[in-house]
Amino acid sequence: MKELTSMQNKLTLASLVASVPVASGKLLIVTNPYNGDVVGTVETASAEDTQRAISTALKGGKILSRYERYQVLDTAKKLLINRKQEFAQLISSESGLCIYEAEYEIGRAHDVLLFASIECLKDDGQIYSCDISPKGKQRKIFTTREPLNLAVAITPFNHPLNQVAHKIAPALAAGTPVILKPSEKTPLTAIRFVELLYEAGLPPYMLSVLLGETKDIAEVLVQAPEVDLVSFTGSVPVGKKIAQTAGYKKVILELGGNDPIIVLEDANLNLAVELAAEGAFRNSGQRCTAVKRILVQQSIAEEFTKRFLKKATEYTSGDPSNPATKVGTVIDEASAIYLEEVINQAVKQGARVLLGGKRSGALLEPTVIVNVPRNAQMIVKESFGPLAPILTFTDIDDAIALSNSTAYGLSSGVITNNMEYAIRFIKELKVGTVNINEVPGYRIENSPFGGIKDSGLGIKEGVIEAIKCFSYVKTFSMPW
Ligand code: NAP
Image 1 (cartoon, rainbow, N blue to C red):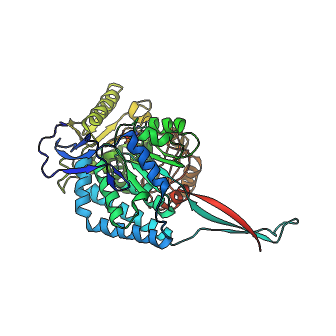
Image 2 (cartoon, helix red, strand yellow):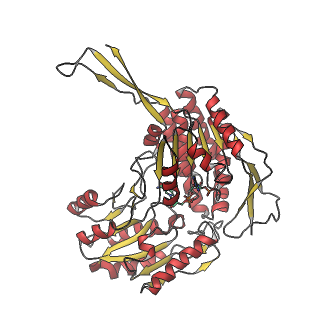
Image 3 (spheres, rainbow, N blue to C red):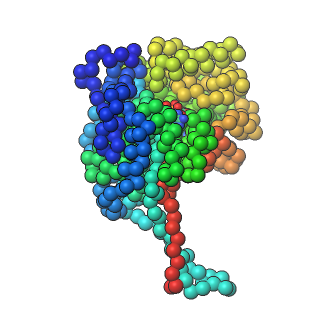
């Protein structure tokens, strides 16, 4: 599969140290998860290249004014929209996400660039008058944000563009140089995006992108004492390893999720069905905030399941490049095989597959499954694919307990028209976000976002919060 068959029309990209391509002669080959075609290659970097990226960033260069940072991000936004088709095809072919999802992702990255550019033009400095207590003084304390010396961004495969944009744009808005280590499964989109930022006027020292052996790149960056911040989005085990090895620096961890959508008996059932399906199947179920458990009140479970089954048939899976396809592949065949095993295990424990469940290579049909025991692997652990397990609960106490029963705490959706119930869920769910009458993944790109428990340390991202992470507050005081 990974053979270099025909290299014609394939992208030949390289890791970039401050815009200069590395020349190691070692290639990472990226294939299309749907058909195994080679999509492109990336020249990988070495441990020495990693050190060079660090020293080049620290050496610095032209310091951009707020307006210049605004211009870079605004120009990048316009370039991205001009190249929407090119980026969408690249995202789709290296990730297996269908073209519809790839285009949707470009819209999200557009918003990230838009909001980050707007933030460049604002200053969130504060003033504290000091004469406000009996022993107060005639002084004022002021706050101002300073960029970090160097940040590292490590990103996963599931949103090849948007995850990268969500780290790079806030870092640049803050004026902080950043070294990006994207997923080796989707590096092409990331490198193209970095090139686009240089084209938009970014001084090269502000950004490098490195692919290569974990021990030469990711681990070196995480442990480097010169790095002030590691911003990581990815799986729980890797996130916890980073927390253990990063040493004395800021660490932002956005990790896995096992989000429920909770449907109460008073809910608008058609809305519940639509949101549950969108949450479970969009992006091939590969969103940290995808609906991974559908929890339905027993009294309406039969009717909900009937309507949900009908809705699920609309999510046709197949060739990601076909505009009619709604669900492309998962990231690779190994992941699809894992999901298939998880389904089979649940079936052995008494679950019933009502729709889908069949696999062909990396393509797994959207799968609706009922009678899933509460201790089944697909309920307890994160399954990163288009699985829709439906579980029932008796009352609100049971729903809250079931929802809180996993190690994760990212987000949640609650479908109800009862305000009292809504408030109880908002207060009692142990998660970073509760969305009433929306999918767990609902957000805008500048609202605070992030989980607790195994889903993260409770430090939020989203453009505005991320800019705070990628900078530090300096206070100064003056007689005033
Ligand atoms: P992953 O396996 O943890 O990889 C994420 C990134 O970490 C990749 O760039 C990977 O590089 C790198 N990495 C691997 N080992 C490392 C190490 N020892 N030190 C530092 N970096 C290392 O995650 P994934 O499979 O790509 O992504 C799926 C996961 O991300 C899911 O669990 C999903 O829920 C989570 N996610 C969370 C959020 C959120 O905001 N909470 C958003 C999206 C996704 P290589 O590719 O080279 O291995």
